[in-house]
Length: 263
Ligand SMILES: CCCCC/C=C\C/C=C\CCC/C=C/C(=O)SCCNC(=O)CCNC(=O)[C@H](O)C(C)(C)COP(=O)(O)OP(=O)(O)OC[C@H]1O[C@@H](n2cnc3c(N)ncnc32)[C@H](O)[C@@H]1OP(=O)(O)O
Image (cartoon, rainbow, N blue to C red; front, side, top):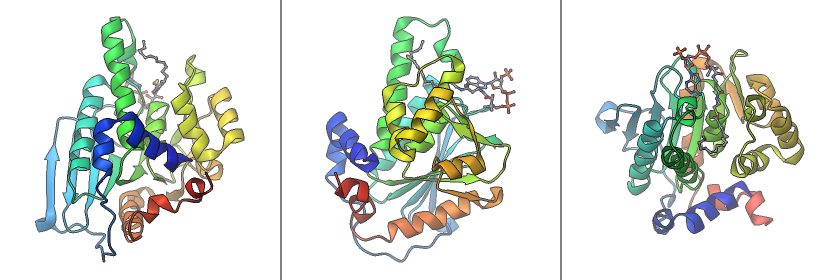
């Protein structure tokens, strides 16, 4: 269902993404190298996002660098969506690893200052940017892996949930979850749907109603993340996992998902 929704988002909700989806980027078996060789790398950077592309593997690492906590401000979200759109347009790019440059934090979620004392126009623009981020990530035709190297509450958790696979640092101090209820807000339905599609109905009900933030081990038990690894192995494991996913021929890494074929 998650993948079905990904495709719905891609084909129904965004015309530009729908056009992009016509082209398969998952064709053919390839022997991919997990390590980036200097001469095969290209990097582009905006003030809040670093994108490093390895042309030999088709894997890009998108690193969030918006200190102090990678909060999702309007500027950040705009840069994020532009960066992802550029990768989507790059037919050589087949997989994106999303991670953080900041110690201890993946993303603190929506920037609280964007929602306080702002004009209705600004709030509308901000909210649209939040939705655009989710649509681009969840509807991406690339394989997306979240390399969660720190805490990730609320909107930060949504970002990770919108990826195909989640690898988290096994540091018990890090937490992740859609904890909006604890903040006095109700998580929007598409936050809820993204969570349900990942952990199932009952776990999502408990998680949302109680506004649970899970430690890394609890996040693994609940299915909120797929794998825990030592902190210094998060990125290399993401790279190896991506290589495995990209070795699946055709679009089968997406299309053979049992949740799709049973729908
Ligand atoms: C009017 C609405 C607009 C339209 C929208 C319409 C509808 C919206 C309806 C619903 C929206 C629901 C969806 C909401 C999703 C969200 O994501 S809401 C945001 C939730 N996030 C949080 O509450 C995170 C709070 N932060 C923390 O838990 C911690 O800061 C931490 C991320 C775990 C990091 O802890 P630590 O390392 O100890 O760092 P500090 O707490 O000291 O923080 C450092 C500085 O960073 C600032 N900060 C933290 N989080 C945010 C944030 N989310 N936005 C902006 N700024 C943040 C913090 O204030 C510190 O700043 P100073 O150093 O004090 O200046």
